[in-house]
Image (spheres, rainbow, N blue to C red):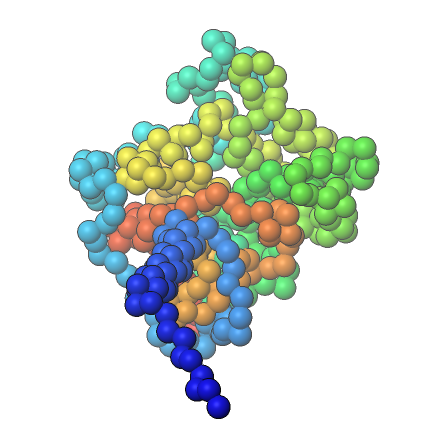
Length: 384
C-alpha cells in the first residue's frame, strides 16, 4: 500500500495567517474601545441590558455612592479659563450671572407679541432685551431630575422643605412622593412633552405632528393622565426653554401656537398655570460658556440649562435625580427615568447630549460649593 503524502503549507503562508489573526484581533479591540468611548466618555445614553442588579435597591446601600464618585481635580478641559472664571463658588456664580438673567430668560408668555416686537427690531435679539419675569429671589431651591437614581432614596420630604422646587416634563408625582416629593413651583417642559400635551388635550387627529420615526398615535397620551398631572402642577410656572421666535422671518417657530393653545385650554378648565419662555437662545448661551471649559461641549440638556439658571436666583441650589450615566458607582443599572413615561421614539432616538461632560461639570460645581447634588439615601428627620 502506498504511504499517504503529508501536505505542508509553505512557511511564508503560516506567517501570513499569523499576521492576519493579529490584525483581526487588533481591529476587534479597537472597535470595542471606540464603542466604549462613545458610550461612556461622551455619555451617549444607551441603556445596558442584562441580568444586572438595579438601582431600586439603593435605599439598602450603606456605602455612599457620592463618596465613591468624589473627584477633587485636576478637572479636564481648559484650565486657564477655569482659573479666571470657574475657580471658586463666588467667581462661578458671577460668571453664570453674567450669562443668564431671569428678566430675559424666563419671561411671561402673555407678553410674547410685545416682547418680540421690541426685542427683534434689527432681526436678531440683543443681550440687553428684557421682559417681565415671575421669578423672585429664593433662599433654597431644589431641582428634581427624572433619573432612576432617585428611586428608593426617600428624599421626598427633604425636597418639599425647599423654598422653590423645579421639576421637568410634568413627571408623575403621585405614587413617587416618598422619593421625589410633591411640591412644585416651576416645571420645565421640552418639545416632545409640549406637543404631547397639546395634541392630547386638543384631541384633533388633523393637528398631530408626525416627526421622523414617530407615529402620531405614539405622540399622544391619555387625556385623563394629562389632566391628573396638570392638577398636580397647578399654581406653578410652566417654562419652555427652547426658542419660539424666528427673527429672520419675524414669526413664531410653532411652539408659540402650542403654548397659546395650552394657555387657552388651561384657562377654560380653571387651571392657574403661568407660561414662560425665553427671549434669547439658552442653548447657545450655555454652549458659549461651557465650551470654554470643554472645547467639545455641544447640545446641553434641559437639565443643565435649568440648574445653571437656578444659580442666578437661588442662594442655595440642591440637585436630586440627576445622574446621566447608565450605571451607578457600584455598577448597577440605573433606569433612565424613575417613572414609565413615554420617551421620544420609544427611547430609540438617542439624544445628542454629552452626558459624561455634564456629569463632570456637576461634580466640579459640587466640589467647589456652588451647588449640592444628591444620589444617596436622604436622612429622614425624626418625627415628634
